Length: 280
Image 1: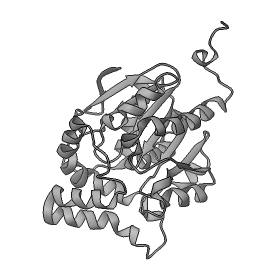
Image 2 (image 1 turned 60 degrees about the horizontal axis):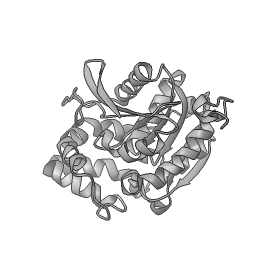
Image 3 (image 1 turned 90 degrees about the horizontal axis):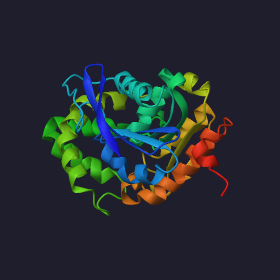
Image 4 (image 1 turned 120 degrees about the vertical axis):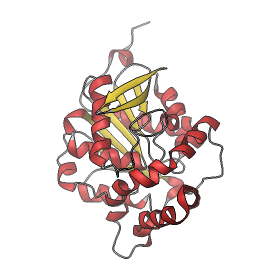
């Protein structure tokens, strides 16, 4: 693994790169930390050049601000990393808020994308009127105003199925706690306002797949993936596990991502030399 800092519009973005082959950029959700993907990136590094990063203002990256951050900024950061580390084009995987950023990136910067896998984007605005899930972002914003990051963070964990059933790496947990004010104070409005650009996504010149975990059926953060896939006419798939299966069982989750990412890359008729190998 190699790591470094990438300058992007006034911020230094901490990144990690593992492996060689087709570029696969992995975008994290709440907490914005590359460490979510350490296990899955290692598992996929035999076939892909896996790029993960701390999103702007999170963990080891700079650029923290009290001004609400628009998703266009998050997408521009991802695009800059693709340009700088992947020669301008990459497959993209995003989980949770990272899937929302991935959908925004796909709509705004399609030329940088070779494919998108969006896992459980909590895009509650696509849920039907009156659905209780639509109040999620407003509820946590109110809790943050009343009790700060600890109150909002506790409620966030309570609403996420499977949390408390596995241990986070200690260093990742410490950084996540330090990112909570940035999450709820700066990033939250952008995620809360998100509505997918259905016109742009329908015309995307690359494969798009939405999906959710088998153990998350019926949750407010899993159901939007089904609705978005239906609206834009792309496949929906079931992944193993929970919202954060990337942490609980990275090898199993990596196996599912491997199938989709390989198919997306090879569907264009391109088979990298590292997969062709040499006759023994």
